[in-house]
Image: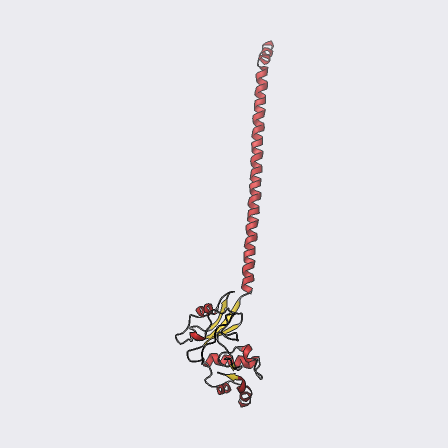
Length: 223
């Protein structure tokens, strides 16, 4: 028993130092483990925030795309183009772009009376004339880039104050006394189906239009 006490007394200091070392190692290991867990949690939070941000950006892009979809604009291009019809267009597009959407100009198209640089407008009707259809010298382009006073690519009044039955759109036709929206649409539909009027009297070929109506409008229209 005395021998054991002597051994303990002899190695007491070493035993204490060893215990401190072991405790220190345990504390360091515990600290490392806690630090690692905190780092993992931080990474998880950061990844979650990044994922949330990406989802919000995607949602915003989707919302913007839907907004643009519902703001779609359309134009009706007729006349001497390869594929006449209604086409969707975007902001800042020109008549030249509309012509390309319609397959390009026919060989019979009269380029001298077309302002290809004019901006497109929603619900606009663009009519491309054939050679010889419009008489006279083409109007000079004004400061706004328009080649005429109408919304079409050609001048629907020909500078005479009269409305051109072959180029006027629905709104322009309605400026004539006696022509409402329905009659204007009938004139446009007839023109699309049968081509341009060769004489003003051809208007009587349209259902619901007779001699009395022709007499009322004859002084206000031209070809």
